[in-house]
Image 1: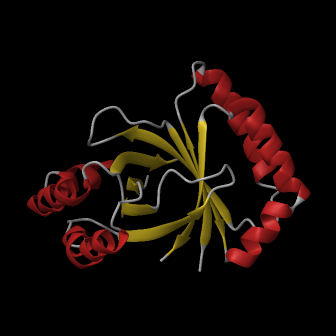
Image 2: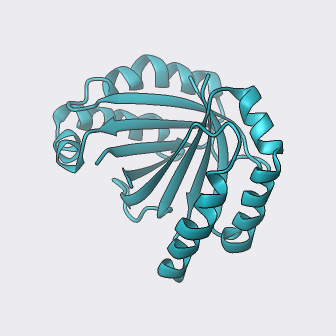
Length: 100
Length: 100
């Protein structure tokens, strides 16, 4: 079953600098991850419950748990993870989900 | 562009009672929402950063913002929302996202 790595980002102080790094540095690194089927970038546009706690959500799709585990252990993923911790450590929440 | 309503649930005290209501009462109400293209239910299976803050994530897909707005105003969605507030008000975070 499809396994997805979900990154939820709180709003940074400098949105433009964040998005510049995100699109031009971080996502090109993510795109190199082995077994990554697709990555969907979503802008948070609101919440039915007031101010949304996040401003960006990325979904990274993998075919199954085995492929996901291999991907996480790859040097390419380590590079993307190191970059993430450098520009968004205090902003990002990561969860691993499996589609029912 | 695709608009999605994302529901992130923290872990309830009584997981079995929660999932029973979620699957047998809540999701059948959600399924009646006009313009809902698909609903994907995901179990949170971990986090690369320690204990994950959520245990369930639901993604509800709509074709665009107009269809989403019509859906939100529907009596079917109001019924699903009322049910949600009844069994998961203190557990759920809702965000509306648009795919880039």
